[in-house]
Length: 321
Image 1 (cartoon, rainbow, N blue to C red):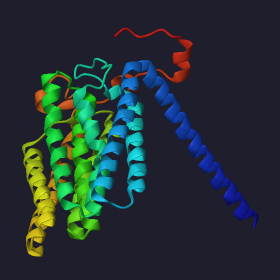
Image 2 (cartoon, helix red, strand yellow):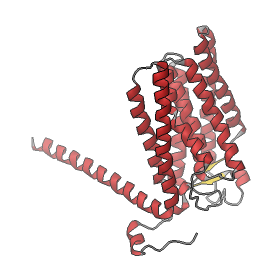
Image 3 (tube, rainbow, N blue to C red):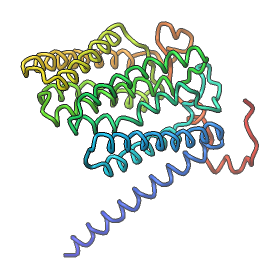
Image 4 (tube, rainbow, N blue to C red):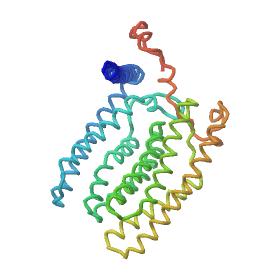
């Protein structure tokens, strides 16, 4: 009996300790981030509120215009999703810097477009789950066009940031995950295709996280296979949504989905090879030869920032920019 009480106390203690550690981590990271880039933090918060309002306006238009059900759930999920994305960026505000390590005080139009693509993912998934195939196809095409637009805007306005180089591929990954998970929920693809997709993107996301935690920095450089598979997957996704909208024969959809599944499997092998190359890469690689190794990503300012206690002791003195 006493053993059960002791285990219950231990569990409660571990839960309280975990909550305290998470709170401490979030508070400290936020304090450091605000001292490092207060202008950038404010810009991210403003963008989060603005995108939430825009997404809710689009959602209400879809719900009322198409007479769809479960609209309140969509609005709730949309708000939580955008809040989570905004919070992650605020905790990693060191990524809001130019490619030559200068702090960026504003998000820039390109990053706002990328965040907008992230913000509308619940809307796209909702349309697929509601079997609004034509609207889902239009939404997917608009998100794909925004993926092209943000790169053009960033280069022409000279607003390329490390945050943008992270958001752009991540948004592509989450768009594909959203679309194929919802297509599977509506029995438009088979389970093995969904599994192949999750394998590829799971290896990519967790591999990048492991490299970042182990090596401290990761390198991003597009490969010919990655570019080609991206184009083919985008085209295949359009065909799947178009086939659902036009009610194509089941065999045509099945052939397209199977081809996409094999591409996902090939992409998983490609991710493993690229991850192995990155893991064995010399520690200094990517600094003097970005053309060969790709762009180094890692918020050096936050990584090297002093603890909160030391920062308070230093007073309100700012580091020179």
